Image (cartoon, rainbow over all chains, first blue to last red; front, side, top):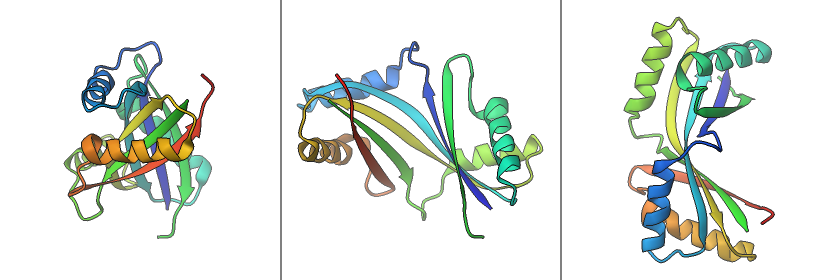
Length: 84
Length: 84
């Protein structure tokens, strides 16, 4: 069994309205030292199987087929083997 | 300057409807090996300052004051020093 931890963020060039909203909220709470806030998605997928190479291929397929919009988003995958 | 990477997830005992929706969508695309999907939030905060201890305290404060709902969510913070 594998656990894939996928972090999906907007590309640097893409505006992040949710991040901007949080930035403003933090400023209004008095946190003046905040320079920037970017938000993203965190996805954890538990996948049956015992071939790391195969698992990684499948996860990347899932990302491009469903989870990630490649026009505006980029992603990173971390794959760890876990006990069943 | 510090970059804080905050990962906010539902507590294990809390149902995750978004994760369930993604799980079902993956199954309908033919990914039968998926055992579970959990979704969470990923927040990156750029913070001015040069005291790691102080930065961490501030980030944790921001989490409990705004970013995290401690009743249903838990979070992890990773703090890295970055070049200005």
